[in-house]
Image 1 (tube, rainbow, N blue to C red):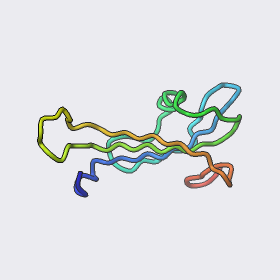
Image 2 (tube, rainbow, N blue to C red):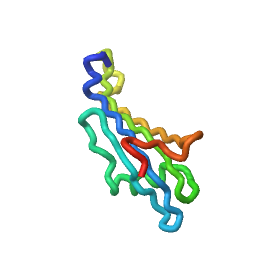
Image 3 (cartoon, one colour):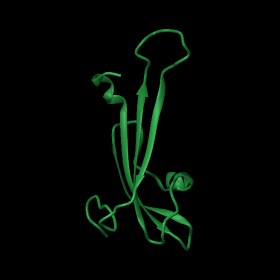
Length: 105
């Protein structure tokens, strides 16, 4: 991958809140940089439920997703085809109750 290929990179940062009574995560905000994905939808929040850790009621978490197109640098036949590399990382704010994007409400 070269610097010119960074146009094929997408990063999405989202914040969710856990509702223990409903056993659901509620999207608080989401932002995207790059064009391959959109902001996190409510349906996608339900889809990542199993990938997030157990949380306390009303606790907030921020997670970061990235997608990068990967093409082998050498054209040799060893079975490595161009593919998409996806990454998913979650964090819980340590010194504040949550991370706000525009304003906390």
